[in-house]
Image: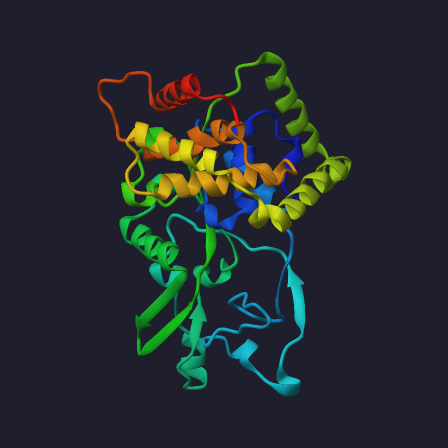
Length: 344
């Protein structure tokens, strides 16, 4: 199977790439929703991101991606002691695809039928939520996801725990994942409850610059002709992005947000009528991630201005009287704040 198309080779779509990198740096952001035209590189970018993620530590054979020093009660593998305790290994950060037609049992886990029939044991077969723990869960065409699966994901995303109570089983295990969704808005809207769970939302459009379109075609054609060679040629660029993500992860918790920035963030959310406090919290976390990716230890107002549309657009109440759309509303609110304050 050929390596995925390199992240560094994606032409344009800077907001999408930045949003995905911020989510890789700060998992608490709540994930990324990428909506837009078909053939704009949405799925390509998500799968390319998986190649940039640093490895995680767990125990060999673990189905739940347990932290080596903190095994979960459901994981007999990691709770073993003495000589039976598996060695600590490093694995790739999980990037799990959730198909649209997937069953509830496959998502949450279910009774292991083989063990039940052969050995008479009542054992749990972990599902996709267990596999995605400490990683990413990707849903293509997320706006077509069935309602009962949306409910499952909302519960897991809110609590970070998957609870299975069926067939005589009672299992709880960690399910902390970064949710990434993509889709075409022409095929329907997301339920508001799920939309609000995404920390960042990005709209991608078909590239209309002639030179950029030609470069997209050239790169894609070169990749399809020789995937391994194309990936090898981009190795240095990929390593630079990967190292930037690793370095940003190390400092993101230490990045400072001045009180003046917090004050203006709250002013912005109040001016836009954002419900609840999730808007400000996400702006705070995204601002830190953006500054960390830039190698800075302090968030600036310029950081907030650049990320505000992807943080707040999907949280705005719809205004039928405003034909300009959500991004211009945010730009006007930012301009109004800038009219009374200098840049920090």
